[in-house]
Amino acid sequence: MKNTNILILSGLILCGYCTQMQAEQPSPAIDRVQSKTDTAWDQGVFVLHVTKRAGNSLEGIQIISKTSDGVETIISADTGTIAMGPSCLDSVKDENAVAITLKNPETVTGDKHEKAIQIMKVLHR
Image (cartoon, rainbow, N blue to C red):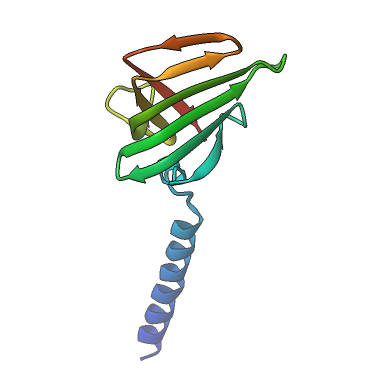
């Protein structure tokens, strides 16, 4: 009986430890991207704004950055998609990064305007 109680107590302690370890692990970076929120990426170099997110589909996308001399660049698109970011290994996805694909984006830097068919921007937590 004594051995059974020790075994049960040990199991409960181990289970509590595992639960605590799982709770401390950060969620994937892709979960940070929510509708109508601004999120900072790459140590504050980029700010991502998304008006609407439904699964992997995004609407009203803006990626804003500023250079050290204060010049602001805004990449915007009406629609796009989001996926977990690529890593240096082709078959592995990086949970600390997101890949934003913007469809028909416009890039504005100062007075310069550029349009493209599609671009992908990888942002890191």
